[in-house]
Image (cartoon, rainbow, N blue to C red; front, side, top):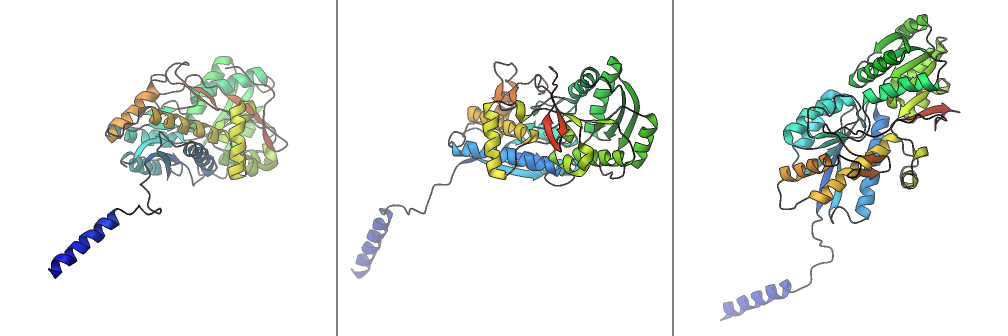
Length: 393
């Protein structure tokens, strides 16, 4: 009888405990979707990587503060490719084989996007680049997209701008980074220059790790160019401008979007003054929504966003929109990844395009953006400002 009473008491206590309200400290696990962001967060393109990271964070913050994606929290996973092919391979492999990651925003450097392309394709996961401009980045894969122009377009644009807007500079020297970005842009510029009659008097290569450009500049100086086109990134471009002025070269500088970083101004110092460069976007010409984002970004980070933050903000928005419209909790990872790809591929007309702060984005059959324009900046009083003359393209 005693054992029976003890057993009854235990059952009663257990039942009573089970009827108690759940502790307020206990919460249901929060559902989330993960998107990876790949970029050069260290290395000689780290200034770009920092803006890419912040642009992604800014968009994710807005999405989560608005309730997430269909009630699911958007979680970002960052991968540092250091701007090199070797690290890009490692990052791409890690992201592509992670069963929690639905899509990738990245890479920035063209060489890194090209290195990761086949890995993403083999594993069926989208990579949407907010910075890679080499002509071949999207070709040959249904899984790679970008939301900015290609280097053949950019090179032709620069040549035409010089011809039409800077008519006094007709003898041009080219200094190019000997990688996929630098060579591709040089090729696009050279082809257009030849077509329209610009005189290319020199073409000199340098490696990404170069810090001394004396040999190239000595050769260029002997050709007496009116203008030097720098086809590379801000870190080398800043040193080139500084060393060129120190060597007595007075030619006009013109850079491409790889020069579009405040660090160029710091590295080049006074030698940056008057430099022209192309960019896929400028907040000066952005609309009301772009100005709102710039203001919120500055509140978060204490600095204004640049082109790459804006393009990443939009790339993250496109991926989030695709997930929101296609995600199925009952589907497999492969099915959800493919649904994202199919949604992006369906954005193939202006009517279907994604409207972001950098404009309307829609894709051709290769995943290239076919309509995004180029703008021109100039360094004035030590700061980037929108050039007074823009060219309709």
